[in-house]
Image (tube, rainbow, N blue to C red):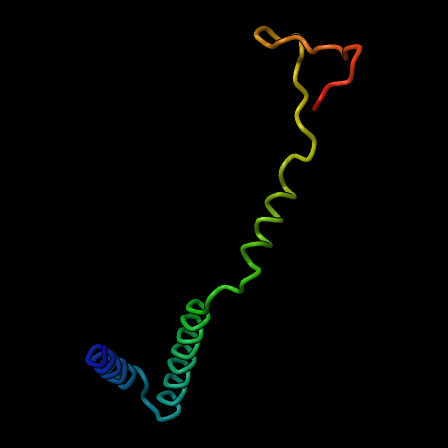
Length: 94
């Protein structure tokens, strides 16, 4: 990893020296590259952080809220469905 970083740094310095004809241009290029490197490192660090413990529970609650709250209406007279039973004279045990 360190070897790759050294090669990339050397290639960057060589390309910047070819493009920048004054020290101000060299400094500006170095500042831009440093800012990009810092942003990349911060993005990688944020991505590597573990997720908070309540995130999965909150996602499950949001998914449940998006689902249908009322059961869909079913046609009781559709073919293959048993007819609904009327209440009997005696209350059921359950």
